[in-house]
Image (cartoon, rainbow, N blue to C red; front, side, top):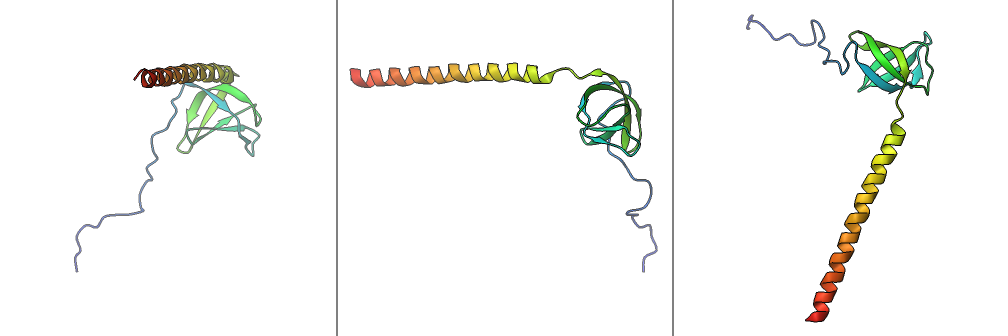
Length: 119
């Protein structure tokens, strides 16, 4: 029998991964649920954030006031910026690029057909 040091597994303090938020930073979030205390609950990259004076469905900008091991607490700074409009503009630009690419393909096909007829 060996009485040497053994590796301890499952004992000691738990290591929590680094937090995806920082104290003082602002984030645009959507409140998904309501806590037992009536605070709104949002998630930022999986980390639960409690936000007082909000209700499910609210889209707000919050500032992180406190970070705990398993959650963060934030305070409302204002309404979230309208990302839907920005996303619509990006989608329109992508459609425009797709149309240009389709036109170039069509021109290439026409040129190939003309070369085939010339031979």
